[in-house]
Length: 258
Image (tube, rainbow, N blue to C red; front, side, top):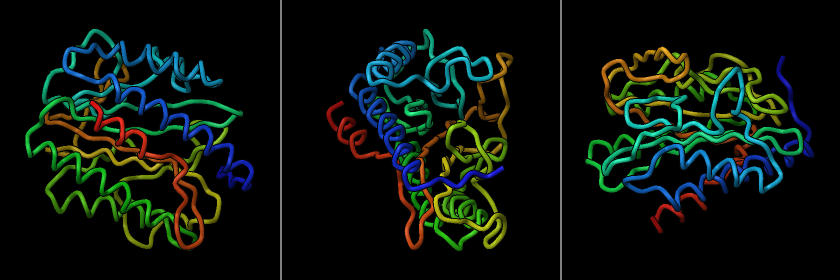
């Protein structure tokens, strides 16, 4: 079932989404070579709790951590742990919170130290494709328009667009209908109506699109071992122009301080 939100509910969701943005900006301030990913998890959990919310991911279907940290060839659902970040790594940090009964859920890929031009272009292109997809999240368009826009932008660069994992609706549940693929056919799929809230999240591989799940049942890696990038925003469908509930601005400012 698809739940369309009232304007009041959308504002509550904006509060949750912005807390995720603030959490990611706090994370950006500590990222550096030599940092263990479990330290990111500890910081995020404390910050979320201190701000009157709870982490969405903890114990969700048995997930054992508060946030997701996906390094290099990990596409999504990476476990924070003893892994030490190195110069040139990329790390996608995915954070979810519940506040005022509503979820905020988005992700950002960070570059640790100096990365190759090949990696920089992958990160840049994936982030661009997120906003190109968001431009299609308006009343009267269709779900396939979002996926087509993201797919087209990335495949022009020869990148693999992950098929096995997709974006989703968002609300009082972290995963609501509809699913939001990062690939699709223009003019196909669900007609978009006002106040549908979506988590749009391109997952793009430097190499081929194929992925596999590790024995832990969660960690998703690229089959060819090449890096993957993940960006995600919480978006409300509106007439003429989508409303982005989350905000990358504080994250980008914190990145410059790193």
